[in-house]
Length: 497
Image 1: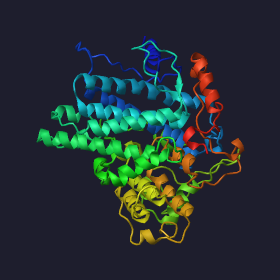
Image 2: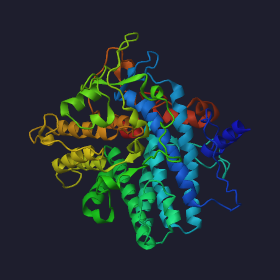
Image 3: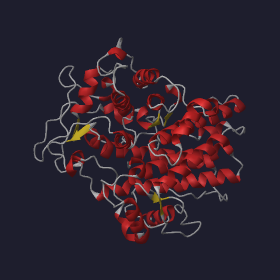
Image 4: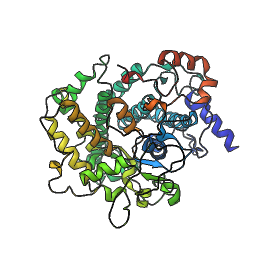
């Protein structure tokens, strides 16, 4: 019976059948008290938690190995050799679409209730999750997606990434507007929202409600800048002009994060329901078959970066040592430094988008002349806050260290590499962001081991799930033709020259 529920849910969610729905999915949107529709705040809790925790597991499984945070010591696991099997595609595709249906319901129900804050919340969450889908796969079902239940569309068309991004930017613009609509909420409603709501002081409901809406405005606009920067190399969406508007000419109309404390992080606890995805992992399941990479550890060593103490175990008394990525089959290296077991329950592994990332985005945009600003100031603020975000103190003279110091004599390309390399570390366990940004910029420069396959090319996307190829074949074939193939080396629209 439970299996039948899962399959039906998958059919209704994405608009077409999806194989491989995760065995843990057993939620429905049915209110047991018989209310005509579920309240928005009751949907946001499960949706955010499910997305963030599943993103965590893919960061450990895919991103961290592909981007040389760690290296597997299982010879048959070849992601570090740029071999990604088609089965890897199913998990996030299925679960992102499942939760997008809940998010869409959240928006529709908030609209019925004349609830502007949760309309804005839903728009931001939808833009976030669909950006992950299209950045990982390319063209995906969008305009006809999530309509299996309402419109009986079970085989939705795939939309071009350019068109998807245009609408995601529109949604974030709408969110920034609707979140300015004043409405007072109760403490119970606000506390149901798990990213910001639980930390907001609701002793004065009017002030608390304003702070709640403002927190989400800042989240939405910071995400807006991430997506604008991602497509800034393409002219079609006027992204550069919009970046200038939100960072300079109309800056007051687009508030963004002002400190680490304002970052969008689902801060895990050790008590259900907000526990990390790794809370129930055995220590061996978490880090028993991987070791931190030479690139990751050596870079932190070169910087004498205090975040090592938060992330890595020492070898011997006090050394941090990594192992080579991309080793030849059969030549498995000895594990050295590994993840600290305490990371299994680390609240900051619920990161979605944070203040240090914003500073590095502003540094890049200023460096490229997208708006008038000092890239050095943003860069150095990002470096410092990336350390304090992890509750570590910035060492004396840290900004003057080789490899960190901002050198006006360096080329723009060298400066950009500094920015993105620092940004790479702010993405620690953050879904697929390291990989997505590497595809966009080519940074950080990763060493290529002797066992790396795929013509030593970093994969540019994941293939479409096998179920999609089979059960939505006509639209799948149209998408493949438009994309230029269904291959891990086919670049998505924003990544094409």
